[in-house]
Length: 609
Image (cartoon, rainbow, N blue to C red):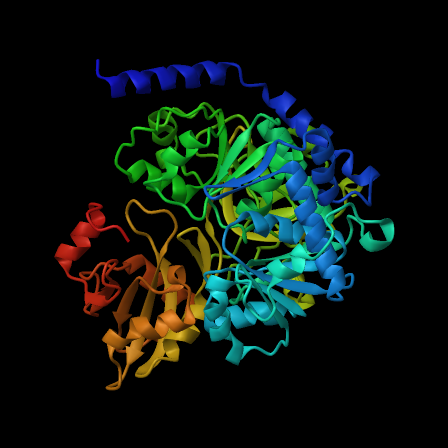
């Protein structure tokens, strides 16, 4: 038996042994309930206070670590205090917003925890956005100050001409800039804040704005309270059984709710350590996990699929992982992923940044996104309702109420809005009241009730487990990001020679989510060779259409959704119609004509998009 086979066999044996010792589902749920029960009783205790407590108990234990930097709990507590004092020094009052445009790093966590500690609201801006998209997100938040990493200064400059908001710009990582926040922080005290300096901030107050793409198009800013941050942190600490001895590997973007809040806060709530990677790298993943001696990692489904497709690594079975936690791990790769990498336990969950309920698969049922156990059903009522297949609007019976789906039947997942004692989860909404109202479904099963619309199709099996089916409406998911078709349409239509366009997602063999495809009508001024450069100025990489279909017309007699459905069914197969189809070539970044040979190479995985 070769060394590699021995290592794999030993790792799998270790994984099986750890799996046997895993706590029962009921104990896991009860631990999460126990850890979150305290939050409501201490309304002035914020997440910064949680860090302070651990700093007193274990000042020298590593809290945050990257390849080039480490911060122990004492250092993190002090760094948080400096950011809090900075916010006070520049006049940030309770409710004022600060924009944050920084790559993954230790200071990212310290910045938002510190600024929000004294009442500031931190808008976590997507570092992949450019131009008008970035300007829109900044304007939605209306920050009075923006902290930008020096390497992203040009990205912000590119959005400036489109901005309506006037904000003071602070540069991070360049002491020579006019407003260098590093210099400002160094001049401030890092000791504990007095009650007067902290101000009147409670768990009910808004702490963050995290952006999400909805069915209406451009990103919306979801309101995240201090209560929500604490609940996420302690709930996941309970579900994962986190302890101070744990080290979690986080290679997801810190501007997202999972990578930036759930992953780090669950570890910091438990006194553990967070290993922050600059970005996900399939080639470096397992060596990082082993080198940093990680016991957990946070995933999204696309990450798992990339790892499974990657060549074998000498490190992939030499880890000490006891659990991985995340969302989007589909049933078709679940067991292969767990088996190849000897993962003892997988905690799959479903949640939305702005959502009011979550699902957790603590039993490790392959392919399921979770269930609501009987002991929590009264606190977080959730259901599936039937939809009109054409309009996407919930169907109603003769009495005007929605129709619940039977077991095995697909419908939209909804969660009742209320408070814990009323039987329902909180919905904190967006900065835009109109957008908030669009997510609320009223008079669902009784007059006057209100439910949050997830926009996701699911089905529930006979055991009560929910299974994800697809997104509803004009969004699709690609490269771990939600893409709004209306935003893509606007960018494509603004290109010279494009008369009309419609965008939709198409399935690609072996890939999670759906790749973007735009069907366009053009005139003689159209030059497809110049299209990639135009789109790069308007859209982040994940939102740029992977496929372009040039049509004679987009039939206006059919409804938009019906036409898109027909186009999506035909997909990117060049033989499905007489229309020419082009593919965004991964290496060159140019659109090339898609023929049957290229189509076959995508199908067999030779070409990875």
